Image (cartoon, rainbow, N blue to C red; front, side, top):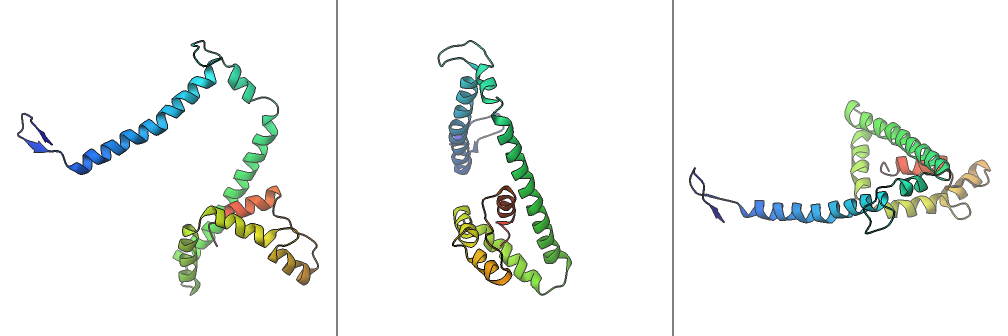
Length: 165
């Protein structure tokens, strides 16, 4: 495509046209649903232009507070576990002359290639209350009964450490 300007003719590369088109499609596919969501949140019914906070107030009722608290605890716990394990792995990889630094660096890269669903299935097969391999091993070794994986602390541990192994 040639564009005439006062500075002479110049060509617009095809890559820029394709990139610009992709950006427009992305904005269309993301901005429009967000705008409709905001519109639906602040009007009493679709088609109306009355402004109200009734829909927002209905979402933030008393039933949401415990869920929000648990979500913040889960996210904070997972973040602390990830920070601790990731910081330790980074320290082993970059600051030590250990022979394990190459193994830790490789394990970190390999864990990024695994899909999250596979990691969730792996944690469930390890820590399932009746059939988990780790539970069976702990029961035989230490005499512990059942270590479940579905409590808040254990799911925070799993979410925080899932990308490290």
